[in-house]
Amino acid sequence: MPAERLLPTTEAEDLIALVREIARDELKPRAAEAEEHERFPRDVFRLLGKSGLLALPYPEEFGGGEQPYEVYLQALEEIASAWMSVAVGTSVHVMSAYPLATFGTPEQRERWLPELLEGDLLGGYALSETHAGSDAGALSTRAVLDGDSYVVNGTKAWITHAGVADFYTLMARTSEKDISCFLAPSGSGITAAAPERKMGLTGSVTAQLVFEDARVPADRLIGAEGDGLKIALDALNSGRLGIAACAVGLAQAALDEAVAYAKQRTQFGKPIIEFQGLEFLLADMAAGVESARATYLEAARRRDRGVPFQRQASIAKLVATDMAMKVTTDAVQVLGGAGYTRDFPVERYMREAKVLQIFEGTNQIQRLVIGRALRKL
Amino acid sequence: MNIVVLVKQVPDTWSERKLTDADHTLDRESADAVLDEINERAVEEALLLKEAHGGEVTVIAMGPGRATDAIRKALSMGADKAVHVSDDALHGSDVIATAKVLAKAIGTVEGFDLVIAGNEATDGRAGAIPAILAEILGLPQVTQLRKVTVEGTTVKGERETEEGVAHLEASLPAIVSVTEKINEPRYPSFKGIMAAKKKPVTTLTVADLGVDAGEVGLGGAWSGVIEASPKPPRSAGQRIDDEGVGGSKIAEYLVGQKLI
Ligand SMILES: Cc1cc2nc3c(=O)[nH]c(=O)nc-3n(C[C@H](O)[C@H](O)[C@H](O)COP(=O)(O)OP(=O)(O)OC[C@H]3O[C@@H](n4cnc5c(N)ncnc54)[C@H](O)[C@@H]3O)c2cc1C
Ligand SMILES: Cc1cc2nc3c(=O)[nH]c(=O)nc-3n(C[C@H](O)[C@H](O)[C@H](O)COP(=O)(O)OP(=O)(O)OC[C@H]3O[C@@H](n4cnc5c(N)ncnc54)[C@H](O)[C@@H]3O)c2cc1C
Image 1 (cartoon, each protein chain N blue to C red):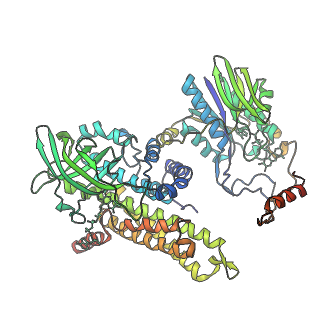
Image 2: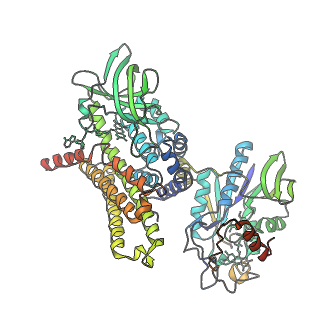
Image 3: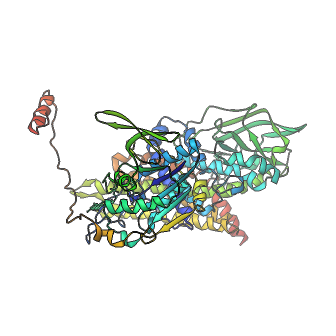
């Protein structure tokens, strides 16, 4: 059953209808096989790009959809219900365009934002390093100014779209104390290592990204030297809302599978949904999905109104991803032995849910952010 | 080229479709309403012709208030403007009344060259509107096409039947209908969705079209549905386990059913 949504405008309704149609016809039918064979669906991103779905929250004048987060995130949630790797990729792309869109000079935006938003290009976000995960500020990739370009050396880790992206939003150290943000086009001096062999999200590429004397033109510095970590964390604040929406979409898909199965599977002479023990499990799953949706939408509405939303974004990410882990695990339970096989999608959903608790700030880091905010109250 | 596309809003084929108990007309509230898929293809074909020859695409829909959703979908795909015929008097119209109204509505589009319809609506399935329209408008009809091209003032088409492929042509203006083989319709883009909001939609009543309300609707219908019942569920079927003679058992069954 599709989620029931209260949308603010007719265009938002038409947008969700479009996303559902693409999800039903182009994403859902292909997801299981591509995930099993670990195939990254670059063509799907071209379709989403052409349809304007990779640029929803950005200004119309640069080719964006000018949608509030309240709407963009619900579209993202619908994508996640059909194919998680594609939703995460969409969220990462949107986040990779964020520093330029938010901190770029008018000239930089005019020059590069349209091509990032038109849909042909795909972005990556390169912050983490092997020794600098939760402690991102410890990163050691260096960018040294040499004439009219920066020379970058170092290795980024865990980079979604490494090797398949057309540009990377890169955080690198420009001095002992300064981290700076760059919009680095893919190209010479930048190579991707072999993809990580992950437990889920196998349709998405995650790999180390190696910079060897890679030259990034100096006019591609976003913000001032030293602004990089602030920009990176700001981007993650919004990115987290994307991950929360992905989590809700995934959990909705798991719930839908579980309900459909419980209605048609009979034991002891009746459909198993008629056993209250199981029905209550499904009821708790539904309650989890809908309350997590309400939580991320509340944070999104704060963002759309321009009021602080950092604490709410962390709460949404924490609540939604923990919920998705629980709901997908319970979905496997509802399907019994069938749920534990690859003939049904719920075991995959469960594997996909796990990473949501880890990336874009582990859930421990979310608690840390929330706790810090409480201390300041 | 000035192209008119006839688009109908129908209950989603993915959802359960029902008739109302009151008058046996389609229960439009019980199912999601969508732009008929065959009409998405008709719009696509019009857009392709426009891209090749220039011109304008006008969509015409006859249907209740919420048919505006289907119209917006066509506009967001790229059609330029729309005419929406909406009038309570139209409820229950039969094929002849529908065609009469559509003919008048087509007449409001000045200097049209080509009218494109689906070969058959997925709900009513009369498969008759294009032919009746051609008769009323006195125009050539080239129907059931899997391919359409326009050269100068001639429209050419391929009609696929069980017997073979017929190559047809007619001079413009003409009415064509297309089958599901004609093309793969494009998805609208979000830009298209935003642009659709600003495109002109003219809403007309039967009076605006100079049609007598008594001629249309349930009252004006030449035939009516007296009773309707859902299709009985399929029976369980017969299971044949192959123990070496499965083939001949299946043959026996088919002979028994007079199928071979
Ligand atoms: C599939 C995938 C895709 C990714 N995509 C990207 C990407 O596109 N770009 C990018 O830059 N990064 C990406 N990452 C990296 C991701 O953001 C990091 O994995 C994450 O930030 C955690 O860092 P870590 O793996 O080094 O774990 P660590 O930081 O080593 O954490 C290990 C454990 O210690 C806990 N911990 C650490 N510090 C504290 C603390 N202060 N208090 C309490 N507990 C703590 C953590 O919560 C965790 O449980 C991706 C990761 C994965 C798995
Ligand atoms: C429940 C039910 C009961 C019915 N009872 C009767 C009855 O008793 N007697 C009777 O004669 N008919 C009856 N009809 C048929 C109904 O009147 C037709 O649905 C309608 O008149 C149009 O025919 P069609 O949609 O089957 O057209 P088709 O000829 O199958 O449609 C072909 C194409 O014509 C165009 N078109 C058709 N309708 C429209 C429209 N409204 N707006 C724009 N374009 C359109 C579209 O391009 C479509 O693809 C009934 C239909 C239903 C669903």
